[in-house]
Length: 252
Image 1 (cartoon, rainbow, N blue to C red):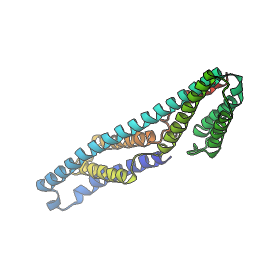
Image 2 (image 1 turned 180 degrees about the vertical axis):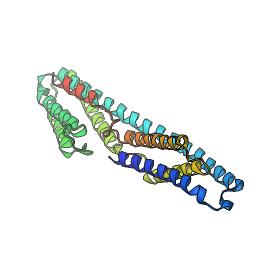
Image 3 (image 1 turned 90 degrees about the horizontal axis):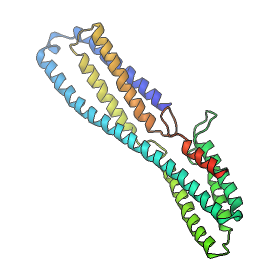
Image 4 (image 1 turned 180 degrees about the horizontal axis):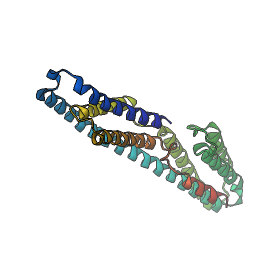
């Protein structure tokens, strides 16, 4: 929701700054509309154009990199769940309770991270953590009767530890990485740039349309940056497909 508000506020700010300069410029005294003044305004705006381009590029790259990293961790998490289940299957029927608890945990994790009821995702689900602890408790109660099962126990302990590490990695990177002060400064730069574009510009349909479309596209770029920065909410989010596949495999 915050990304919609930021994009809308940015769009309105850029449009108001542009239209404000279009209206105010003809009313300025002649000494404020000479060529020297225009050159200073243009050169100052050019500095911020370069800086804004660099910052926007870095923000897009940072958000995309963070999104891809979380998507990779979700797939790795699902893969480890499947491999843990396969190891427990190989151990034998003694692991039936642990596998049942594992299925309950995965189902809860999917429901909490990708809710279908319109609720906000749960960042650190205490109930899911308790279910995962129950899986660990069930595994600790198993005592291998031969060397082969002892090796399988070592393997599942390693995979279970990896699952815990990946879970906490996802929790730690849940929040956005775009600093609010940087976003505010970037918006101020963009406002200055659009205001300078309107300085000495004719107030005709082509200029007005160009400014409005440009403001809309810039606002859309900020929306996409913030949307990717929240990987489990919004229109661009990590899909639950990998986790659903893992759950289907465990329930076989």
